[in-house]
Length: 91
Image (cartoon, rainbow, N blue to C red; front, side):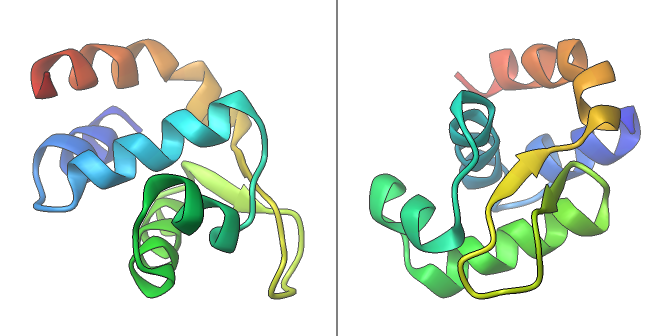
């Protein structure tokens, strides 16, 4: 998980947006449309980032529907300290 977080957040161009998405989801679950509005990003951009985060077991949807809410996974929560360390380097 640590390697995946470094890659997703610090190692790729979209890392800053992925970190913003994760931060919002840690506050409370949201669907892609809510995230797009709150972060002022295109829906397809948010969906792309969520798909990458889901692929690496950082977030999980509550279902397969259009309005599915996304949550941070338990596995991510166990590595949250690494996330905080990585995001310190972004600022």
